[in-house]
Amino acid sequence: MRVMIFSDTYPPQVNGVATCVETLARSLARDGHTVMVCTAGGHRSRAGGDEPFAVVRLRAVPLPLYSDFTLASPVGITLMRLVARFRPDVIHCHTPFSIGWQGARAAKLHGIPLIGTHHTLFGEYVDAYSRFGHQVNQRISALIRRYVATFYNQCDLISCASHYLVRDVIAGGLHRPAIIVPNPVDTGRFHPIARSKNRSKRSAVKMLYFGRLAAEKNLPHLLDLTEPVLRRNPNAVFNIAGDGPMMGHLKAQAQGMGLDGRIRFLGWMRGDALAKQVAGSDICVSASLTENQPMALLESLACGVPVVALAAAGVPEIIEDGYNGFLASPDDTTGVFARSLERLVREPKLRLEMSASAYESAQAYSHEACLRATLCSYEQTMELAGEARSQRRGLRLPNPRVLARHIPRLRW
Image 1: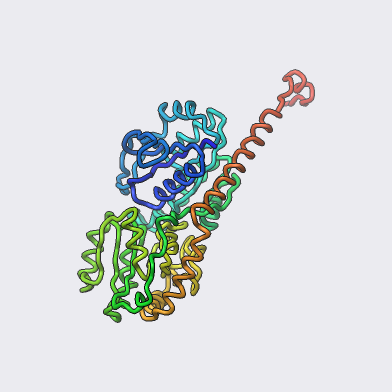
Image 2: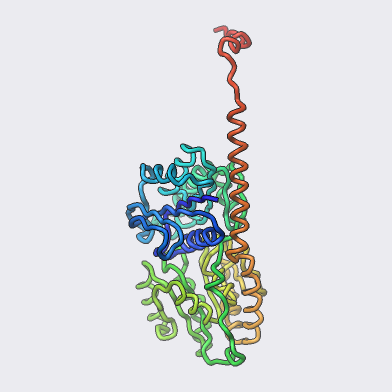
């Protein structure tokens, strides 16, 4: 199969969507499919380097409030020509913005089946970045949801990684068929390291957050949630791997708590270095309220690392409370998050049990399992596109003169 993937974000950018798109493209190529990725930023690279497929990068500009995210022009002839030359069997859009619109227009122009994968709760980001009041933010969120639904209504089929996100885009006005396709995890890279019997008896218990240090991740609250555990357990340390606009604020907050030595900022980590850091940790923590199916939590589970998180958005669909981690209510004021985290810090046996459960639950998100689901979604997309073409060809407009004889004359 020939697959053309359109995404506004792709490595070396570091975020969940970029990781997901790269893992999918590599899985398709390994399975013998011909792949081309079209993305924003930089220049065209050819297959044969680090990637076994072509990656086309269009010039782009960063968003004012989200500088790590870039947008290319929503119109252009470069990708149109590439689509005509590449002749894909299916176009797969991973963004409702600039590059996505180019993919949608190319699919319509050339009659190519189009599937769109929706990744992000954009409407939930408004509260994190907007300085307007709550009522205005709600209206902005509604407009964003309507815009997102408008884009995905151009597609033959829509896939999302969580039921929560499907309900969100339907609420915005989606009327095209939608299915669940999980995000793929590179289990060849993220897996448990060999654990010796005395690993659980070591002095330091490592808690880890990794990802962008940005407002939508609710990180100041995460530091507040972990603070009592760090104070009561001198053997616990909190490692933060990542970078972003909130780095300075978080460092100042940790210093103000008097915990700057116990909260360690490791900076950006990618590839094998990140996988080693995750697998060498004991507990993954998150306080985000805007996650669909976060790659960081999936990669933690794949490494056998249990998760403590807030039960918000799509997180409860992958973290089962008491099995592969613990969940706390997003508005909890009784300290459930801290108590659950402290149980894992203080009980090595519980950590080992949950570690096994975490690894087992991650197998449903292996790149092999997700590739099978994706290929099935491509087949569905082509079937739906074929049915739509047949229906259009089946329409026969009657002769206007014949039609006029059957329409009664209006009297004014």
